[in-house]
Amino acid sequence: MSVQVMIYEGPRSRQFQPSTRAEIFRTLLDKGYAVSSVRGEVASVPASTVTLVLGRFEQELPAGHDAQLQMRDVDGLGASDVLSLVDQVREAAAVPVPGKWKPWFPVIDYKRCTNCMQCLSFCLFDVYGVSNDGKIQVQNQSNCKTDCPACSRVCPEVAILFPKYRHGPIHGGEVNADDLRREAMKVDISALLGGDIYSALRDRSAKAKSRFSKERDEDRALKERLNCLNKLQQEMDIPGEVLAALPSIDEIRAKAEAAKARAQAALAGTQAEAQR
Amino acid sequence: MNPDNRRILYCHCAYARVVPGEVKQEVLTKLAESDLTFDAVPDLCEMSARRDPKLKELADGGAVQIVACYPRAVKWLFAAAGATLPAEGVEVLNMREQPAAAVLHSILGAAS
Image (tube, each protein chain N blue to C red):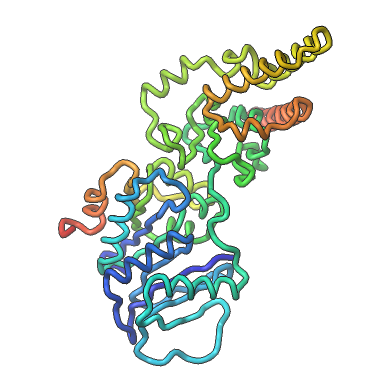
């Protein structure tokens, strides 16, 4: 459920001052409300939305209340008063405060994607899934770790976008020859850590365990682990908080194996389908 | 509805600082001060994640100008919400790359 605000300037109403109209738009958008300008008939209202029509009405508004479609006369109100009014309507309708979640998640460019499932195998947070017809999909956007673009770095086709990322082509800019060359030259993540990423983590963990048992040198093992994490952080632009939040090695192993199995099953399914 | 039946969608990219603030503010101010009707949304990414039905309505409704970010990102954000943008009649204006004057020129015409 969300609130949709309409700034009405149609028949039986007076226009807003252009600067006031602009200020109302800006104030409401900054707080996460969708706003439309309407000069004619108010379009049909979707059931999942509380639509609030604001205007400088020439006639008194009819009494009574429709919870889904509400009208308010805001003649003489400034942008901050309008915002308070919209907040009140939202609270009364038990609509959550907008903007609690920063919408950071991968978007797949299917024109480039080859359905290799590397992203599914790589992501530890179950962001990816497979559709009924065996196609890779982003299924759990809110599981994605804010500001972490790591899966786009493992994609061999530059097919994963993060529209809010700082740099191209991950932000959605066109993929040029240089990007492709970089991809081709990119020591794949495997090479970066000498095997697949989770294998590398496992190997290092095993070596660290072995050292623990032989040397009981906790400091050295910790240093080793930090080196590994620093490499990951630098090469893949993974935020420190994400690395700090990684599950234990055993959980990583279990998740990686489960994801790999899902990817293989999906690929086997699509291959079988193609052969029919 | 605008005289040429074109719809305009403005994305405020409210939850990130990747669109230059001055571009966003100038485009929004001039757009809101004009006589054009338009839909302004706080964040297209958030709408896509929610699969907001408004995206399908926009994709299926004829000529539209989308004032947001990179065309490739916009195209696939719509697609992710089950709203495939048609190959024709859609113009994406990129506030991350284009100056406000160029965006406004495309929306408001030479008068801007």
